[in-house]
Image (cartoon, rainbow, N blue to C red; front, side, top):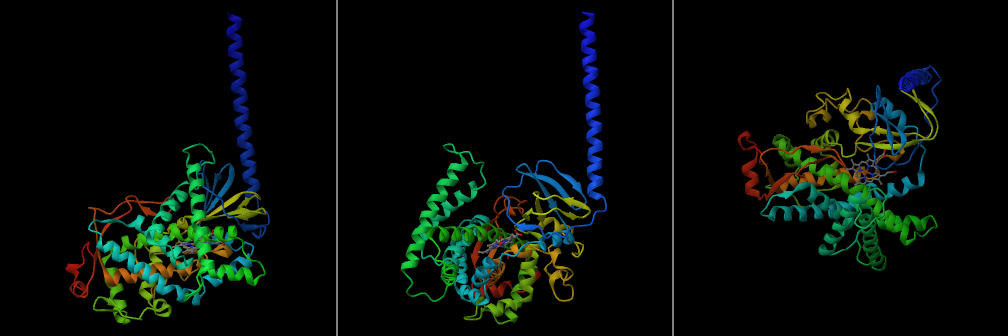
Length: 470
Ligand code: HEM
């Protein structure tokens, strides 16, 4: 009995000694490892970074090293990077993917945008009319998703799908998006299975629309993005297969959909919160002869006119600064390099953070305040270094649709300021959630009313009328 308890005591003592030694060993190794990282090695150029997107971001363990965070992305080390200088280093070290850029530069060229503009206006006008004629408040985020989906299908892809079919396709698309990042476990009723089914249905719908479009080229007055994609394939001696066309189509919808819907919702929420901003916007539209007696003057909206509206530009910039839809971009490290005094080994993932960079940029005064004038003449807070402000990312994988996105948001703001009156349908403004993109938790409930010329006259100017209804 006595021997048995001695055995137990000595076993416990040995175990404790082992644990202490192991802990010491780990502490010393960690110290050495950090010394090795921080030790003044010659910094390699960050030319080994390539634009390669990661999937869902798993934030399990985080160690903070100044502006460089270490965490994990599905088991692989992931470094999260903040701050203009670090972000610049990441984004300027990427390889060029010239062909892809060339195709997209045609899709989003000045001429292409000019030809999309009347269609964009039409889609927005129809949508606002429907919102205003609904006796109930609408869920802005949900409706903005529908609106951007319709814009992508009708304007970018030029599909002539009837409204009812478009509605069905939208439901399927939402199912696909909701399940796209599910765990790949193929069981009945699993998210993964639902996602696969939705993708198949979507691909069938897209194939039908593409086939109809290929057969029916008569009566088209402009080349949409899909036409350009098909033509550029032919110019390079490579006719795109149906699969490539479907994938390209889906990629465009995917890139445009959630981001633009998020920004549209944030825009509407900020216009509701800041009636003076909306009034200043109306003043600018009036002074440029665009808004007259509550109507947009016929033929007044050209691309150059819209690009010349400086206050409108400031408003959109500020919405995208404070409510940046995408939190950051992922890259894979192809060659070990040094960042902020630490070595980032080959094979790791790097996420450059857009949101944190905006939140900590020293160039922005009162960083949490919605203040479009910070981008106006005289202040131009974004002029010092372009990596402080990057809602569309940067480097060679910068957002290819950024000009289209801005044009869409500007057209929406013009239409809202000119032809709508809208008020918050809840007592207080909702909280904001950041995933998967920035949006209000309740979607933002708003009642829309049409704005005829008389109402517009009544609303001009006076402070007393600038309440929560705008
Ligand atoms: C407000 C709306 C939008 C925002 C905030 C936004 C933002 C971004 C960001 C941050 C990236 C990633 C850059 C990176 O990985 O470093 C990106 C990529 C991309 N965006 Fe957008 N985007 C918007 C709308 C659009 C629209 C309307 C389209 C076109 C239909 C579009 C097409 C693309 C494409 C094709 C890429 C991939 C670029 C590549 O990988 O080479 N985006 N966007």
